Image 1 (cartoon, one colour):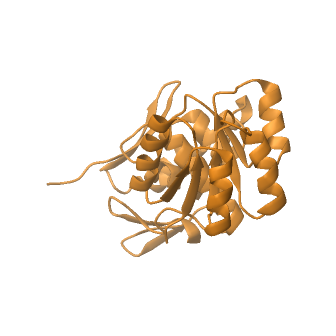
Image 2 (image 1 turned 30 degrees about the vertical axis):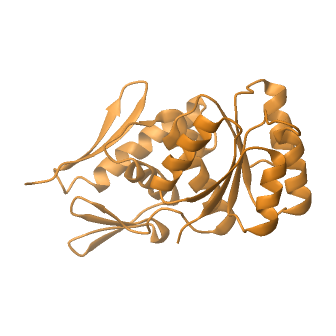
Length: 229
């Protein structure tokens, strides 16, 4: 089931590029170039999430966020902005934002953050319910990994970590992205916990030699799945 995104961005190039990328990822996107246009869209259509720039013409994104919380309190939103000062981040979060992502940003990270917010708010994921990983079948919602009828029950964090890697299979997923999405913080102790969970996943997947979780030192991880031709 597609999710509906309202993207409020006054930069036409970034707005167009980001809209196209999110559509490729399965979202239905409506672009609004200012706060007034966004409020008109909100009054005529239902959205699952709103992505806000702060520096908008007319009323800025903070003002629009206040209107969102007053009139559409059930719709989650996140800020996507070049404003990186701590006071801006704190102001955005104090207005009820579910996340605050600073430009320049990684598009895959944005998709993961959107997915995480929607999962928390709606109790469901926006990506497919079932992943094929080599000879394994992975069902995130059931926390289950199955191969040749043999079923393994995963912990929630194991499933969340594996899901993130599956969503970007063959591509680098930054450590920071994983830590902030799954653990909520990229501190030292969570980093050590992440390494432990990666070793657990490797053990869960070790029956298929065509699968490996590759560590890119100081950067992140890549889920490699080789196919036999």
